[in-house]
Length: 464
Image 1 (cartoon, rainbow, N blue to C red):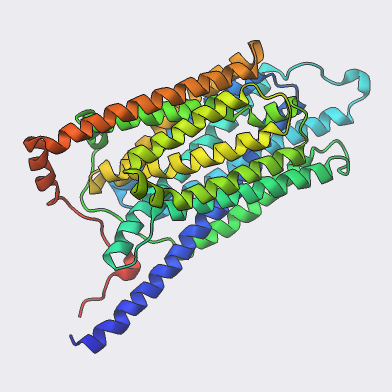
Image 2 (cartoon, one colour; image 1 turned 90 degrees about the horizontal axis):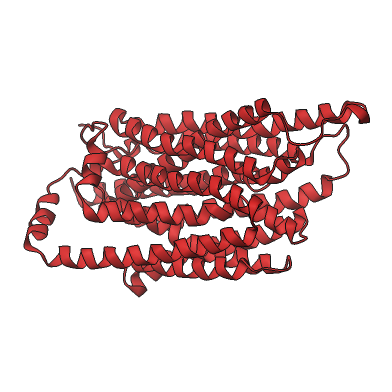
């Protein structure tokens, strides 16, 4: 084939790749916007039905059990069946529906209570049956949410590898940052809307109920984009359920990475579910919560965009995450002793700074250590490991903040981030030893013969 006939074909492929990249950016934006408009205001709605912090922690912990199971199960299913695209679309629909159900249920309960005569209205905490119902809903919600995020990350990692083979360079963090833009915009607009609607809805309807419509509408648009544009990038070879676990269990560096993921998510989540409640405790309104949170996500997006450059500048992904953990440690220690709502701005800015460095870089680090045929399973197991830490943290955070103070959970978070830095020091020492040992060098040469990522269906050429 001559040069003249090859060139238009390459240009056409690159044009298709750009469309897919735009679709992946929008997918991150739309998904995080859809669920993000609910996430940050859900604890406030629970407070309206007199849920104590300990019960909020229980519902979040039960949900995160689902978030632990689902990434492993769905990631394995995707690698096993080679149907990542179809599974992602189905699990996204499931997730959007179950994000709307808990708020709808609580809204109906509040409206029923509002319609009762004053003397017959319920007082105190909700019944244990209602707590169990919300725990079930939270389990399903987080099951779908974490599976969707892990599977979308896995699809994007494999697509980025394929784009590189076509000569189009695209960094994972700079796609993933559009999720931060989505949730930041959703939280900012949501806070303003809730403050505006606070006294204008009839019949005891909570203003948070309006978020259900936003979630469903944006979710429907997302599904259409996934159906039309999502690439079908898959890896070669079949995998068994134990392949990933065996591979991780026999590698010291992988075990250390997953231990780091556990501690990072524990440190983030022991305070995460109570950030908005803490701002209210300090005197902030819902619009203030939305503004402070959105500002944090602006910084989060900036750091996601800069994280590849920072990694190259300061010596790799490990150093980048260590730096982010150090900032997070200083942030939580500083905010533990906050005495006014204005300190929330500093808290969210530093939270965005640290999470923007840590979250996408951690995913890229794990992807770089996984065999090509196990990318989805590795990324999913990373998510599951983090959710184990998050579940324990949410449960502990609820009890500690209720029995002692918010200050205590922030101090614990700071100490946990400090332990993460120590684990990275151990990982760096091990990698240095591994790089100098001749047996590891032999393994590296053999690894080059392993299977590579397939091209997506839209780039495959028809046979003559």
